[in-house]
Image (cartoon, rainbow, N blue to C red; front, top):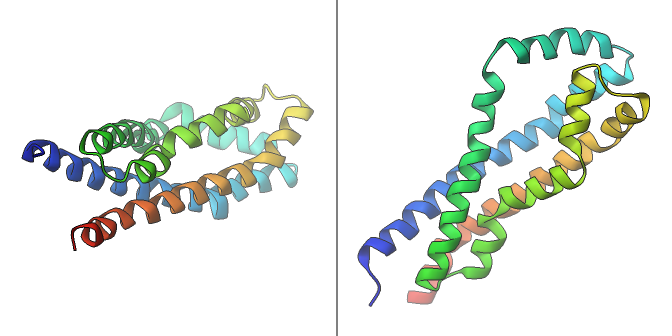
Length: 169
């Protein structure tokens, strides 16, 4: 018999993981549709200096980006705990790895494609032309792939209780 505390923790972290995955999917859809396009527009319309003077100054003078990053950190933590608990209770292990670790998958792509360094270089005036063009070419496709990862992960997470009902029924 499984511990009721472990069962409760499994469902609690499933809920937290689903919640934060929903928030992150919204982030990435928004970035793909609007925010990232706005960055690209600055670059394509030859207003890169204006972008650096406005967004870079805003970011340096506020804590908004730190608050923006909190759900990403929570996604790493909650998702990892959910995966561990899924293995402990021996339920939905494949879904938990695929969906619960979404922020790890996104982070691997973000780091692997060097998007963060390119973005920082573009926004801080340290990017050469090749880096600016690289950022311009990967910004939307990479963030759109993140949106797809989070949206698919959200769907998988929402399937967990339905699969559990089917298993028990």
